[in-house]
Image 1 (cartoon, rainbow, N blue to C red):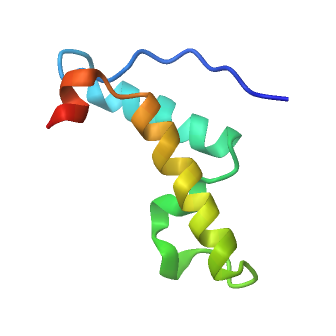
Image 2: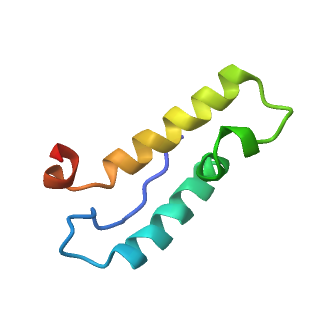
Length: 73
């Protein structure tokens, strides 16, 4: 079952601080917030493959929440 969240894409014309708080909430919901601390701070019980998968999940969530102009830069 997929999740749907409603977050305004970051376009630079909206409030980055508010977007950042919402983005963190999405990463928590997707169970990949640990990626924000860096791979060295991720739980030791995770394999390298699990860490990579978690990182990919977080990156894709962030990409989907950015406006096209921001992505192009």
